[in-house]
Image (cartoon, rainbow, N blue to C red; front, top):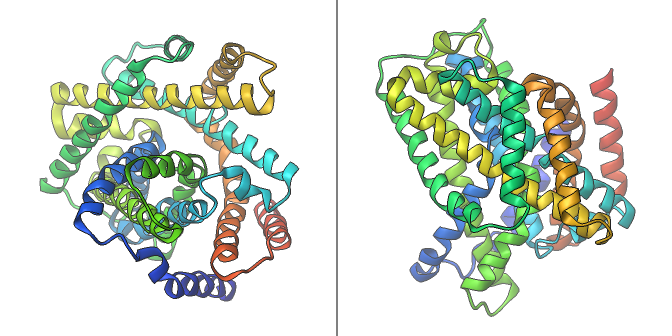
Length: 410
């Protein structure tokens, strides 16, 4: 606890002492009108498959203690990614420059691992499996292997050559998905259901559960990988006179995007906490479809579930494209064509998806529990380096990695 308080004090001082640095120059209404779409676009970048199911899982598992659990969830799924995003802004959105402070070779290894996790080793298969689970709720005879194979072929067809259909789907599906979630949340709040006590869970245990489940959204990886896109969008919309103005606009966009994410998380979590009896024993990936069916009935429910399924597949398509291009251009230096790396990416994604959602989480959770604290510390140290000139980085990150690994194993 003492170490946690020291870390909190350190981060708090950085933000308080430099608050004017972040906020100066972005208070005009004209700037706000231009930056709001960027913030909402940021929300859509972060909002993927895990951002739906894990807040629901937190509500289901904590029940009446969900208020404490949501605090833990917001720390690791919103505050931490926001901290990493701000730190990335100081490195012009370049994840290579950000990780290079740990060494060039280490940077490339970490970047490749992160890309693999948000690609074929975790996020792409998770998207496919959540899509499968929502469809299976209404079509129970659907076979996992057949659906996964069909999904991978569809992803291949959409990414073999760049197509505007992906951009179109992304533009329309995100608002539809958000509208569906708002309807579910509103319906859940207007119902007479109330949160129940789950296994006599204490407030501290609920907080810890929310804290750990926030890791599973993997939103901090989104901060590392999406920050460059966000900054490019800001540069295209604003003519800024100084770096401080640029950071200010980026900071406001981050507040809007992360704020929207936090509101959706809280709504989903609180609603699922009201239906513990309905969701009891339901696999994690099917929580949304079961709750939707209960709240909206079979007709409206299937529309929502199809929207969720398409949104998950659209995310998988985008990630498959990004990862395949990264491997082809960066890792293999253009020696292997993009189409071949795409085939390998989808083959790995298909094989991982056969492990089912619980199987993916079994090998993914240890990686996240051990490594994510190190990424959080790296974000804090890199931010401190840019704002107050704090230079130490390699030793603290290494020591934390050893400590995290030891405490997890033993």
